[in-house]
Structures are given as C-alpha cells and as structure tokens.
Image 1 (cartoon, rainbow, N blue to C red):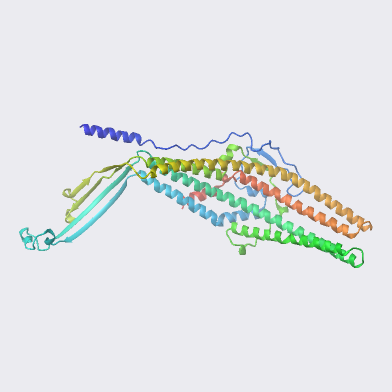
Image 2 (image 1 turned 60 degrees about the vertical axis):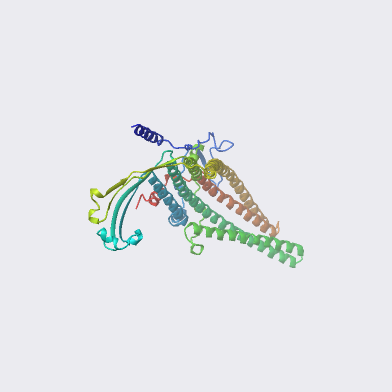
Length: 507
C-alpha cells in the first residue's frame, strides 16, 4: 500500500511538472521608442520642379503602404511585368517550397507529443532436430513426437511507446520548428518584396540608361560637327594642329562614355529577363519611357513601431531569435531525466485458429527512466552553445532593426535632396538651353564663330543628361521608400493565397 501511495504521488508530480518547460520563454523584442525616423523633422512636402518627375511629394507620417504600390506609377507596362514576374519567377517557387517543407516539419514534430502505436504480426514454422538438445532421435518416440518435430508459432501484438514530456524538451523542439516555419514565411514575404522592388527599379534604370544613351549620341554628333569645323578651319589656316588634336580628344572621350552605358543597359535588360522568370535571349520588351510615368504625390511614412511589424527582414530575425530561444530549452531538457512508457498487448498461439482466444492473451506494462550521467561535457557544451546562439540571434535582430531604420531614413533623405537636385538640374538645363539660343542668334548675325554654337550645344546636351538622371532618381527614390517600409505585403491577397497553397491548406 505504501508503494502504491508513493507511485500515485510520483505520478501526480509528473502531471504537475508536465505543465512547465525548461529554458527561457520567448518574448518579442519591444519596438524602440523613437519620436521620428530621421535626425531632423521631416518637411511636409518636397520642393517641386516644372518637369517630368518634378511634382512635389507629400510625406504623411503614420500612413500605410499600399500592397500594389507599383500601380501608383500609372504604367500598364510596369504592372503587367510585375504580374509576370510574380507568376514565373523561380525564386518565389523556391521560397514557397521552403515554407511548405518547414510547415510539414513542424507538423511532424507535433507527433512526438502523442503516443506512438505500432501493430506487428508474425508467423513462424520450424523443424528442429533433437540432437540440438543432446537427445538421440529415438527419444522422440518417448514423447510421442516424430523424429524431426515441427512447430508453428503465431503472434499479433500492439505496442505503445510514449515519452512523457516532463521538462518540456519536446514542446521546446516543436516551438523551434514552428519558429523556423515563421522564418520561412517571412522569407517568402521578403522574396516578394525583393522581386517587385528590384524589378521596378531595374525597369526605371533601363529607361534612364536608354535616355542617357540617346543624349550621349546627340553629344557625340555635336562633337563630330565641331571636329569637322575645326578641320576645315585648320585647312584654311585659321587654327593650329593642336586645336584639331584637342577636338579629336574631346570626341574620343565622349565616344568612350557610350560603351559603359550600353553595357549597363544590356546587363540591366538581362537582369530583368531573369526577374521575369526567363533568360536574356528571351527578353524583348520595349523600354519604358520615363515620360509616360506618374510620380506618386502622396508618400506614407510609417511609424517606427510599425516598421518592426512590417519589414520582412526584421520579422525574419525575430523568428530566428524565437527559434534560438527555444533551442536553449531543448539543450537544458537533454540534461534532465527522460521518462518513457512502453505498454503492449497481443496474442500468441501455435495455430491461427487459436490466436485470438482468451488463452492466447499476453500483455506487458513497462516503463523506463534515463538520466545522462557523463558524456564528456558534451551536454553542457551544447547548452552553452545554445545560449551563445540565442545571444547571437538577439544581436543580429538588433542590427537588422537598426539597418531597417537607416534604410527608411536614407530613403527619406534621398527623396528630399533628389527633389532639390532635380530643381537645380532643371535650372541648369534651362540656362544651357537659353545660352544655346542666344549663341545661335549671335552666330546668325556673325558675332560668334560656329564653334561657340557647337560648344553651347554640347553644354545643353550634358545638362539634358544630368536632368534625365535626376528625373529617374525621383522615381527610384520612391521605390526605395516603399521597399524600406516593407512593401505593403500585408495588403496582398496573392501572398496569403500562395502561403496557404504551399502549406497544403488549398488544393
């Protein structure tokens, strides 16, 4: 009776302890208390310039990011290409498969909390020799057996194996698996964000490079005219050979700027082809004209606390920190005793007809306790490694969060300052245009030589290139801000559908 009382008390203790799990509990890091994202207060809007991409942009703190932000550029071609990339990019398929694998691994891990039931059936027929028992063959007759007796044996058993999760090691392992699945989900969202922002940025870069190449070719044509005029004047004795060589050098220098631009354009188009899920040889989409785009006038600026919730990379590292925290509990549980129950029930008989009868019933109730005593310090080292990994994950999370805030601040600074750059570039382009008109008028009256006209044309074309670069920067800065704020994936129904589909929720 005393033994029964002790066993009952021990069992009650196990039930009570089973509600606990060793190791630290994960708590999401709190969002930093920051009044604003930039060092100086943000202006309510940027400066405006009366040119393409020169509209004033209004910065609204606390506003949300639209899910399909690329549609704000009002470009059917950009929208169509983004949809094509989302449908065909193999990187997204890989991210979806990784999430599905992690989800199924977590589901498989949950099975460790339940008893494992196994059913086995065996049948055996055997002929023996009495010589193996040290008896002569004639001894079989005294037992009423043939000289070489034959036996049959049948068995059917059902066994249960159940590990009691007394210290929560199994639950911590499952927690780590779910955290890994959370990480893969954030990675999928990051893949969507990276693909859309990189594709739109590449399309804008392609448009900018095409415009720069066109302007550079016009400058080269002007330089060729200058060289032609200089050579004519040299033939008439109006200039020296040094003047001709100087003009040839200027032309060659300008021509040398064209191949790098063409290289960038071709490589950008190759990258766009890959984003779209194809290969460079298959890409033949016409280049987007910057003049057809609309610069979004209202830009959201999320609060710092929202950025923590919105940025996929921040959420990725939060999931990694969660996983590392759970692994500390796993390492601690591995140092503590394990309790396993192994009951079984079955039937045994020498013929199938007698197998499932009361006389053939057999059963066992078994349990085991295991306690690691000495493993060369391996368990302690693994626990310390898990703690160090948790500290590493916490530092990586903090670093990622700081970089996220930097990205947003950099994007906001770029939007403000590049608006000022465009305003200045427009003034410079207009001044160069006015100078060209005045020089042409003076040339018509014979007041200046034709070389002055060509030089004024050169200055104007250079100002045009700087203006194109400044115009494109306004659009790419806007893309960078949407990316830094998280891209609005939480408003995207297609991401939710893909997550459900890849995890077996949808057919």
